[in-house]
Image (tube, rainbow, N blue to C red; front, side, top):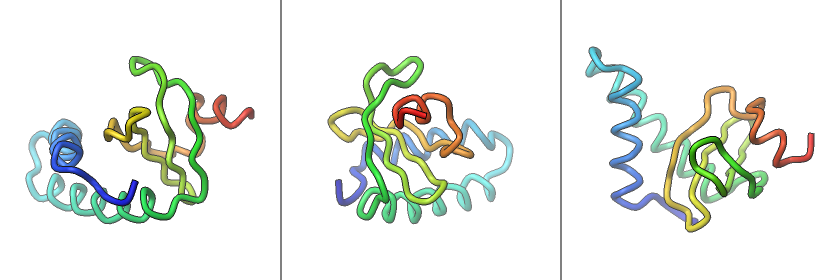
Length: 96
């Protein structure tokens, strides 16, 4: 995966609106941060691993440092994980 599709960007925007419902400035800041970091995570992940994620079933985890993005097996953006490297679903997928 080398970049985000419009539908992925829409999902990211929906996620930040939900996280910061009353703060447009934080929505925009967080959205831009996610877009920029997702470019690096998707294009140059340290590791990509398949696993299961609650409510989603089979997913891919794109890992770069401590940043983790979750996609469908066909690379449709699902979410970014805060403190993602310590997420129990990811740790299970990594066999830890």
